[in-house]
Image 1 (cartoon, rainbow, N blue to C red):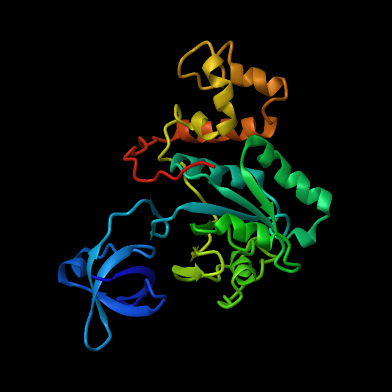
Image 2 (image 1 turned 90 degrees about the vertical axis):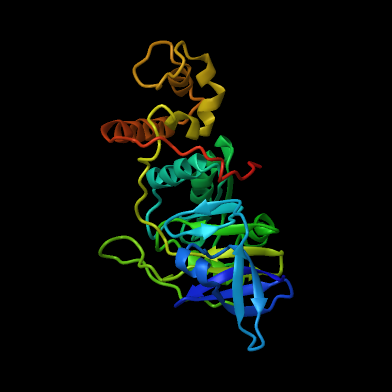
Length: 304
């Protein structure tokens, strides 16, 4: 039975990309239609009818699932932020990073709109995250800066772009794959953030590098309430080197004596602003009733 990948869902019709690069319009078989849990990115078995329409018979097991919106079989996440317009926001970046670390993804950081700032400023924004251990690129959809480097990172991957609206995700896709010509938007001067230009989820093939890009709506708010306060520290990856040296097992790195993480901050081995964001998120989680993180092992992408 042929296998297709769901690249788009519109009004109950599922657009499948088959192994020959052809697009098949399909509908689910009865029981699958009732379940309603076929996502963009899913691999499915389908039967081709004489009318050239497909019927989806089975959904393959998923390697990963991301929510808000639902997408399946993502192999990496590219977090896109702007150096300017909207303003660079370290707190929001760290909030996204904590969420992806909790889901066991190794993020690719993309700092867009490099043409709006001096080269020194762009390097200053990306530099700390590279030092922490993250992959970080600076791009410009106006000049084409970073296109080759980003395509190299997307090769062979199924990548979803995430980040707030207005940072240029659609424009970035147009730079990487101009054949799609996605609609782009402007940042509102009144509210200081972008308007959503992506209204639906679709999976865009990148034949040049044998990869895929998920085009999804942007996010402006992220809740971390699925994380336990005691688990938060492990999602600040630079803490891992020092936390085993803390006097207390399960140290929250807040008020405990002989805390190796706090010592590392004082000695300049951990960026103070990262530690401040950790304390901010910790207080946020302690005030709420954090739900235990579901350690199902469903989302496991390798760290590079």
